[in-house]
Structures are given as structure tokens and as C-alpha cells.
Amino acid sequence: MKYERFEDLPVWKDAIELAKGVYELTKDKFFNQPGDLRDQMRRSSLSVSNNIAEGFERGSTAELLAFLYISRGSCGETRSMLLFTEQFGEAAHLKSQISDLKSKAESCSRQIRGWADSLQNSDIKGQRHLNENTRGVYEAKRRADAFDKQIQETLRKARPQDYPEEGK
Image (tube, rainbow, N blue to C red):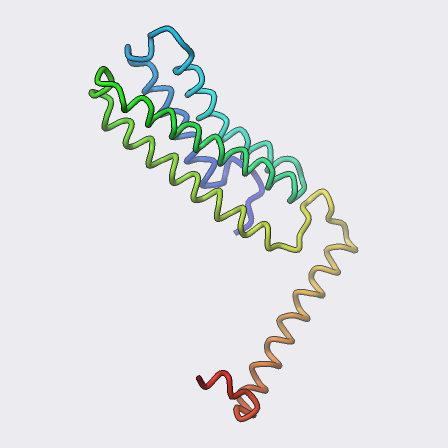
């Protein structure tokens, strides 16, 4: 499926849910202590969706990848602070919320990783680089590759003796 808007991306939606959950969590009195744990946790969790959005809007695969890795780093930062918070007895009443948020952060991280892996193996350089000529070249290559694959499969079926390694 091709997404036209970052708002439609399932990973962006999950990242928004992560940030909302962190904002709710950090309303607790535990986070009213001196220091910037609350603010940093909020910033890092919101950074996940913001970097997905910014990378998506940039128009090039290379820039999208860079922002996806930043977003994934923010998932790790958020998870680290959640793990840190768990270490305090005063936060024991938040255990269930923290566990849910860690799972959400891990899920976002896995989704981002999968997306980044698929982009790294793509020939498409991004919307910014597409024009009629590059679209035509890409489509011609895709059709040629599919045709070549079809020919190879036909040959393997017609002459299996020429492909002994496949019988093993």
C-alpha cells in the first residue's frame, strides 16, 4: 500500500499513541520532582512521530531514512527513561502504565526498522527525484526483471537437468 500522507501511516499513529501515553504518565506526582526527566521523556516520545512526519515530507529516500533512524533512536531514549523510572519504589504504582509504554515504544522501533530495511533495498530515490523519465526507467526495469524471472522459471521447468543444484 502506498501512503500519500504521514497521518495515514500505522507507525505514525502508534508513535502518537506513545507520546500521548507518556504525557499522561508524566502527569503523575512522581514526575513533579526537580530535574528534567518529565520534560525529556515528553520530548523524546514526541520526537518519534515528529521525525517520521518530517522524513516523510522531505521527498527523498535518503532523508526519510535519516529521519527514521533518528525516530528509532528516540524510541530507545523513551524506553530507557521508562526503564529508569521503574527503578524507583515511588513509581511502583506506575508499573502497568510503564510496561504498556515500553511495549508501544518497542513496537514503534520494530516498525521503523522494518520500514528502513525495505527502503534501503529500494531503487527509488524518493518523490523529489521522480519525473516522467525516471518513472519510465524504473517501470521498464521492474518489467524486465519480472520477465527475466518468468523466463528463468520456464527454463527450469523445461530443462530441470540443467539446474541440478535445485534438486538438492
